Amino acid sequence: MKVLSIVGARPQFIKASVVSRAIRQSEGVDEVILHTGQHFDANMSDIFFNQLSIPRPDIQLDIHGGSHGAMTGRMLMEIEKVLLEQRPDRVLVYGDTNSTLAGALAAAKLHIPVAHVEAGLRSFNMQMPEEVNRILTDQISDLLFCPTDTAVKNLKNEGFANKLVHVLQVGDVMQDAALLFAKKAVAPADELPNEFILATLHRAENTDSPERLAAIVSALNELHQTLAPVILPLHPRTRKLIDQQGLELNVHLIEPVGYFEMVWLLDHCQLVLTDSGGVQKEAFFFGKACVTMRDQTEWVELIEVGANELVGADTQKIIAAAKIGLGRQVKDTQQLYGGGKAAQRVVSNIILKG
Ligand code: UD1
Ligand code: UDP
Image (cartoon, rainbow, N blue to C red; front, side, top):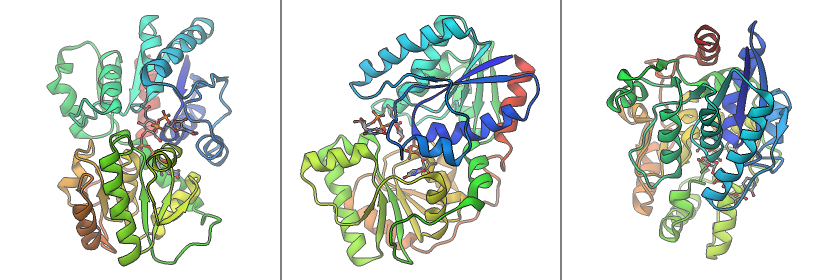
């Protein structure tokens, strides 16, 4: 059986690393890897292939930038050509980026079955590009690998129980990655303070809104000055928009780091402040309280167990939540994310269901 996996953005390399490893450990399934090129800087792409031993992509499309429509459209055209040439038995897509949607759509139009890892997540905010991508991808997938019970419930509510598709709760492949690579943690090369808040910021809903971006920058500056040093590996999108808006971000800025450096930062920080999907869970995997600078989250179980607090882009709410969360330990007592077996379940089901 030939599976063609489609990746393109940073979180997809991390998710694919564990699934690709499980594929290589299984008999009867071969993988072809296609990289759309959505993320292309060495520290946004190559570093993950090197650190996480992901095989070099068999196909590199080098498509990035432009509007959402243009990027997705160009990917759709080029992925279709590759699928016609490669004729895989199945296409495997991850998460909710433009690469995810383009890959799923190209496959579905050619009647190639699609497996979606991270199916069923919903923020119920259709303004988010990720929400559009994940809803459409789920609609054209026949193997829907849900990371949580909530994701399964979301799909049931959308009528998936009546469709001839498989909705399976397999756990979260990002927990597999965190467990597998935690022992490889390495300190970033930069000189860093001993005690710090780890922050990440890149989501379009924050960076593309001048008001939200300014309010978050103001909160980070204040926390850095008065509570604890804030270390922020700055996503290229955010760097561009902060420059464009002429904002002064006076925290400890570093370049985006590899996954081994990131797990070190997660392990050593006193608090996580983020708008990332993946980093919200990783805070939990490393026992740290998380303050999420968004209005909704797909990972609602973290809110329910008190590990995560949603504060939007409100300067005062961010500061107040950070003060309460600093140094607070959280515990994964309920095995919310599958305990590190998700990738194996994904691959077994692909083999079983064809
Ligand atoms: C994308 C995903 C988002 C995900 C994020 C992970 C979509 C719609 N969004 O957002 O869901 O959370 O990836 O990080 O797919 N850039 C560089 N170098 C790079 C990568 C990007 O300079 O290596 C620049 C691009 O040129 C562009 C900007 O950053 O100007 C945004 O990149 P893009 O891939 O469009 O979206 P992300 O914000 O990264
Ligand atoms: N990450 C990383 N280096 C960084 C920032 C993030 O390795 O400088 C990892 C992070 O640990 C997580 C993934 O990238 O595994 C999350 O990706 P991102 O926040 O870009 O996207 P999202 O999860 O929001 O889609």
